[in-house]
Amino acid sequence: MAKPCNNNLGDCQQCDERCKAKHGPTGQGSCDNTYKQCLCNHECASPASKICYSGAGQCTANCLDECCNKKCASKYLNGVGFCDSIGNINLCKCQYPC
Image (tube, rainbow, N blue to C red; front, side, top):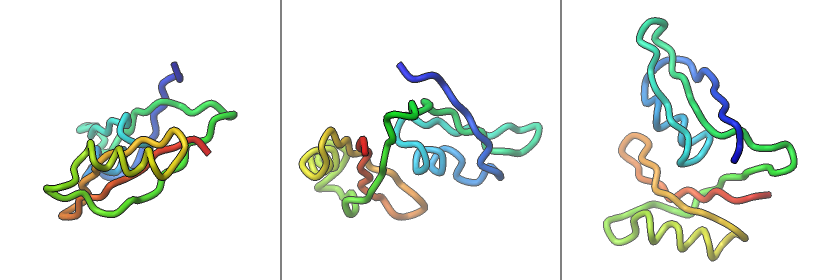
């Protein structure tokens, strides 16, 4: 299991969404109310295993997480897909070793 890492993403607006966009579905963003900063907790990637991200279109009522995951698995070796809502747009994002 990878060791935990965290980093500061600035202001708290859409903190969790920005954390997941940067580090994938395991990223968890939370607002530090004392300093009004977004803290993003995620698994550190080992230097030997770089993780890449790409898009696979939009998630819709007909294609949610399971469908997105299938798209990414067919598109990338060991690819995993998840729907990520940023604002009013729900995107299918792929995460894969590269």
